[in-house]
Length: 407
Image 1 (cartoon, rainbow, N blue to C red):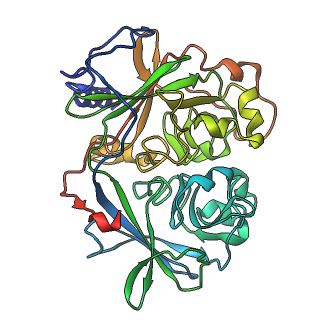
Image 2 (cartoon, one colour; image 1 turned 30 degrees about the vertical axis):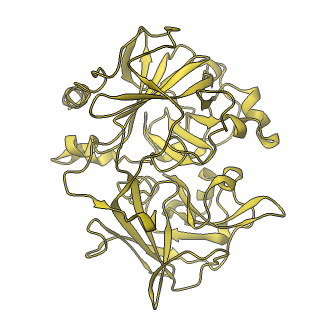
Image 3 (cartoon, one colour; image 1 turned 90 degrees about the vertical axis):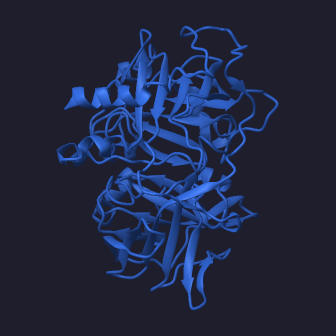
C-alpha cells in the first residue's frame, strides 16, 4: 500500500515539478536570476471556487451538515453537544489579522470565527467550534486558544469532519447567518444566539497550486508550482527551522500533516496521532511581537516573508496565511477501497534530506502537553534541506464559481 501511494505521488509529480517554465537548480544554489521562474510579489487569484459548504445549528442536538452541491442537498456530519451565547473578547493574537465575519483559524482541534475587532484592546472578538474531546474533562489541554464559555462543542472527534476530516474550512471563508430574508453575512459584533444557523461557504482559489516548496535555509526561496508546470517564487525564508516542539494540537494529526492554519501560522505535525510533536511556519511581524519572544529564542519556528524586504509582512495574506491551506487527513482512509484517491485529495508535507524528497521524519515528544524538551528536540530538523506541501488534486466533480459580489 505504501509503495502504491508512492507511485501515485510520483505520477502526480510527473510533468509538474519540472515544467517548461521552471529551471531546476541544485539544492542550495545561490542563483537568484532563475530566469525561467517568475519572481514577483504574490498577487491573489482572480476567482474563487466553492468546493462545499457547512451548516451549523447552534443548539443542543443541532445538526452539523455539509453540502457539495451548493446547498441543494445536505449530508449530516455530526451534532452540537453544547451551544454558546457568548464571544471571547480577547481572541488569540493572530486573529487580529483575520477579516471580520470569517473563519479566523482552521485546525484539527478547533475552528475559530471572528465576529468583531475591539480597537481599544486591538484584539479580535471570536467564538469557536470544538471537537468532542474538549467537552470532556481535561480535553481543552490540547487547544490553548479555546475559551470554554464561547465555544460550540460538537460530537465530532478531533481530526474528523469539519476538524480536518474532509470538511474543514479555509482561513478567510465567509460565515453567513440564516435569516427570514435568506442567507446574510455575519453582522459585525455578532454574538451567537441559541438556534442560530450558520453557513460557511468553503471556497478556494480557482488557480490552485500543486506544491508549495520551502528551502530550509537562510534566504531560502518559497516557490509555488502549478499543475501545468509553471512556478512562482513568492517569498523568502528569513530563518530556517531546526527543532520540534510541544504543539498540543498535533495530538490529533498524523506525521507530515497540516495541524492548523491561521493568519499567523502553518502548524505541521511530525508525530503520529495521539502523540505530540511538530513545528510552525510564521510571518516575520508575528515573530517580532512582544508576546512571541519565545519564537525568537527557540528553534521550533521557521520565519518567512516576501521576496523583497521592503514589502509588508504576510500576516493574514495568501497563499500561506489565507484561503489556501487546511487540515485534511483521516487515518482510516487507508482502509477504504478508494484509499488512493482519498489520500491524494489531502494535503501532505514531505521533507528533503541529502538532496532527496521523502516522508516527513517522525519525531514525537510523547502525549504530555507540558514538560522539558529532550536534548535532541532543538536540532531534530537541523539537516532537513527543504519542505514540500503537496496540495490536493482537484475534485472530479464540477466546481461552482463564486460570483464576484460574494468574494
